[in-house]
Image (cartoon, rainbow, N blue to C red):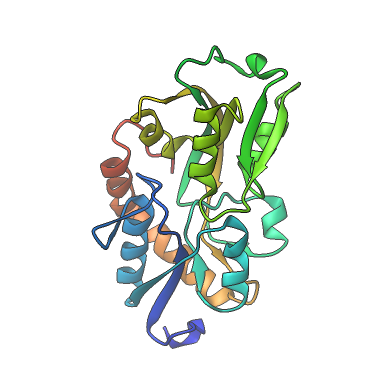
Amino acid sequence: MSDLELIQSGTLVLCSTDIAAPPMTSVVDGVRVGYEPDLGRALADYLGLDLQWVDVRRWSDFVPTLTERRCDAILCNQAITADREKIVDFTIPYGRFDEGVVVRSDSPVRSAADLVGRKVGAITGTTNIALAASFAGAEVVQFGSGDDAFHEMADAAIDGTIDAFVDDEIVLPALEATGKLRVAFIAPTGNPYGIAVRKDSDALRNSLNGAIQHLIADGTLAEIWNNTFPNKAFPL
């Protein structure tokens, strides 16, 4: 794998976050757990590479971390979009995910129509902000300047600063477990998630594509998915 032009020879350095977003990714007692960490380990094993993680906290810092060669690829809740593909390249999808709208437990909001005249939060630069902007009559409030925008949005919903917020469906059950928030409704967007690489990393992208295809073909990825999301059908 010496032709992959990795920033560290023999090591795949993946960019993620140590902000808790179970079941996608979390760090528990120093161990990285979740769907994406399990995928990262399976990919590195298949490619015969060691694995190292680099954590960032602000969404806006992910691409600079990649382009400045502080990591080889981003594996962290990155939906494949046309705007992002202008800046980075993506592997084939390793999953597809819907988006959800979260409100306080006592909120009357049950559908998009109920968001008219209400403040809806989302993280800047994500597919979530595009969905929030699609709700007719809603006022979009952008988050992302802080180190933990996800939990800042949750706190803002709880204290009434905003009425609702949008995020990826798969990370929302942990918020409902607090008893203070609930998922008002799910938008079936089915966004494809991919691993982002630099525009000059064709060899790495091709190798990662081959690895993902192998993990799909031999059932490994479905097994990881079913262990992580037992109530959600494997989409690939």
